[in-house]
Image 1 (cartoon, rainbow, N blue to C red):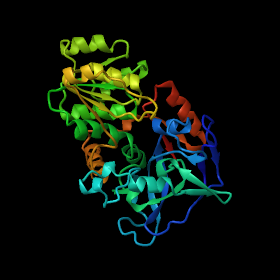
Image 2: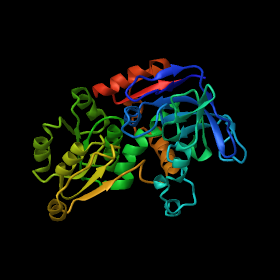
Image 3: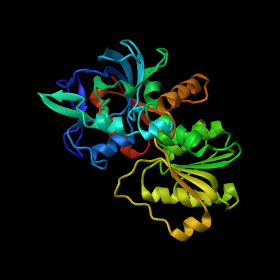
Image 4: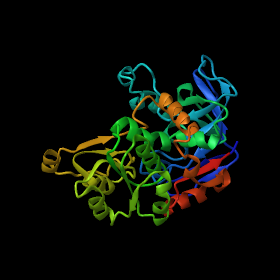
Length: 358
């Protein structure tokens, strides 16, 4: 089968037709990937920022069809359409017992340590235990979420990461209140999803902050009431909030300097949500005096902030009701052989979401 493989950090992906999947053993399923979104976390893995050893197959924001199930699998059957869930809940750990399956790492780490593929008899791993830049992939059955067959694969793929992460940060982690003010720093796929969720929550002001002029021209379609470059953000924020700052700010880039910017944009007593996945060596520095005297709430949000399968199905419902314009998030469609073009487009900062259709 075909797959896109990273051979060494910083190099283009090598698209091959010699990859094989491993056997779908007990508790596993084989998925025929039909669409996969290109997430900035894939690029971070490819540059070595996430510490994933090469070679590996990137991709974790995917959707497809079950073509084989292993022994003991009853949750899905061949022919079912599914979204890939890259943080599968084990159901037995302390996090799962608290109904916080999105924080469960037991199965994800097990999946990351298990080869998804083989090439010339040698094991090849998928990014975060997935590897959706391949025509087929074998995953734990907990790593797929069954959906209705009328949901397009490209829409389902976006829900696999960016939409779940961005909307969940707003609706589940921050629980944005109606009439409140919101700023979103970074307007890629996750940021756009956060903007749509802020609109759904009834925010009165939604400022979108991004260096890309092309993105700033698009954000009003998704619910932003104002847009600013990073250099303009403080002045625009002062005008919109009367100098008070925003009730909620969301950092969706994954860098300490943008987290600092999001912290600065929040009002005293406001909530700052860090959503972007950054490097472990990139430390956020805040003065103890500032933390205490400004009484701001600083919190992280991972993968939607609640039970992932349940939330993904809720998002499908919101899309059906016309409350999430996921089609408009797709700014480019590519075939697998052109996947490197998508990463070059990502580096320009102008893309919202590129989808690879397999």
